[in-house]
Image (cartoon, rainbow over all chains, first blue to last red; front, side, top):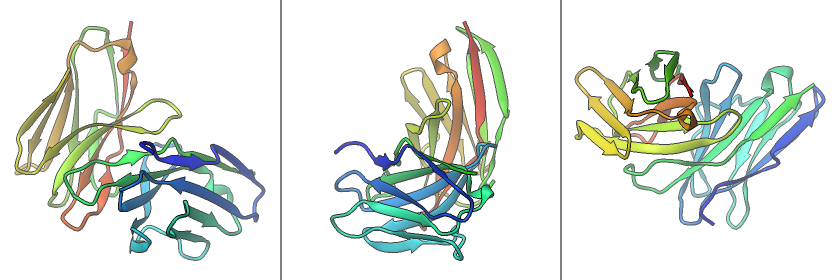
Length: 114
Length: 110
């Protein structure tokens, strides 16, 4: 499709529970990116994939966060043992391989940890 | 932010006026892009300007890029109430890393 589909739109988890977010990138886009947006509006880069390979994971809190992009499946971002500060909107974006293209963003998953 | 700053942080204007937002960045870039985010929604790609371009237009949008000053500006002419949103610049470096500015909140009063 021509849109990046993120599910679910909203997710509420108790502290310590697991959260799993999904992203279906646009067909033909070889790059997938995950960003975290907290209340002050800044976008924090988490991780990027080139096809199913991790391209850059310098933004990932490695202790509890993991992500995958497997062939023929939506990409996923998983947070084990969620903390209150994980509450944010998580955006996925996909892009064509050329650097001359912008990103197409999904509408985000709002995670609330209570 | 991870890459740069935008100013102003907030801008309030009357419908019909022009709005100018500025973005500064830190590293060498391949291109710079502007996005709009309506409250509670995802980002919409507005315009991309490559590092070898100085100015680009798209409808009521005009973007400039000064790589010597590592800065860019977004001008929205004849603003409308529907332009009310947050605007972010984002830079893509030669290693395919992408960085966002901190955003400008634009309020266009009818």
